[in-house]
Length: 346
Length: 142
Image (cartoon, rainbow over all chains, first blue to last red; front, side, top):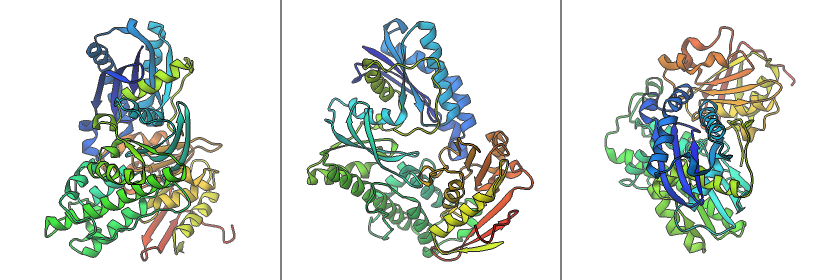
């Protein structure tokens, strides 16, 4: 059974054909990085305009790569949120039109549910129940997953998402955007315990907080005293450190603080919930050090780790098609009254 | 008026007091360095509109976060916006409709309507902050 997935929740236009919720036949992602790079982030108005231009060619290519036509599709699965409302609208309107014109059933999928399902496209699936950590530029959340459609939020960030902390610290250090890969790269050359940045464990909850860490990096950078902080904040001029080693150490120490908290809280939640599998997803789950450390640490606690391949960590429509397959199989269809929602919990 | 906050909780409480004075159409501009507590202040302001503070997180990623309610609440964060590009955001679609709180408002350039309320948060120590409010008078007992 073939499902066509469509995701336009943020800045990537994505379409994919997936067989039986598990096998990727085609997976097309058109990145808007070039459009937004000059702004150092995503501009909602520009993102939705770009989706309008790209949605048709991207869906066409997904079908062409799969070597199929609309006649072969059993259902269209579209992301209904959370995300940027103008971006979501493009995908939802397009999917509704396709469904109407070609008379194909429509299903609507929560973007976060899609991320959970990215673990089911890798050949080896986690067994229910398991713990899902979704960690990206927009989300940092923990869910208990008892089965398809059975999710319980255990915690989420109270301020910045982990990926956002990377972007902000990268900007503070005069590095580029997106900050994750750049900091991850520098960190490989630095000493993780050079600076003892705070780790917000928020005992008694499974919530996260990365805002204080960002503030601590800022204060530390000023303490190092290699620049005029005020001027930099006003002009966004890049920092000039006397040696690259200092920058590498800040990157490594910051990254180690983020990863310690992510792994510490995720493993603690798994133990508390008596879950012996953890599935990671979202853009930050592509982080090299996070992948290495959790793969090394969690098994010591008797917990198995499931990591999606890198191309399924970031936004994609294969995960929407995979989740949509289970909606379709259980008869959860959407109709033409479907509207996207910017804020949706799972 | 100038207020002193000793910690995050006090910043949030000042935010709540600001929120209680606001009426539909008001625009609150927040100024302060990275980590000064702008999002914390927004949590406080939003709580006066019945929004759970857990639901207010950083809006840097999406730039505009919209909360439906009796009075629509817009949390706008221009951290990543270049001033000369602010006109392309369509801020006029939001500002003045419900209650808008704008972080990094200095980057909005001329998009900020006249008569907006200004709240400036300055570092006064690692946790302490000075909060300067213009265009709004807080009740002594609230």
